[in-house]
Image (tube, rainbow, N blue to C red):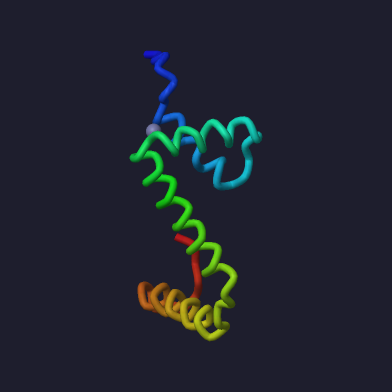
Length: 92
Ligand SMILES: [Zn+2]
């Protein structure tokens, strides 16, 4: 089914991801911006995505403490070792 209304929300939502990644041409970005101005639901979706990405970017910039990674690795090793009692990281 092809709607010729021009207000294609589904398409806009899909393009939001590219929009946020900065992978669209100026023309396409302008079209999406215009759609967001006129469409509440799409704007909400855009706001949510933008916020989510900002949060992820912020967290990734933070240094992960070495001790945390060690503890996670140890926990995984312990769990695997506990299954068969051999203590080796054997692939299943
Ligand atoms: Zn829309």
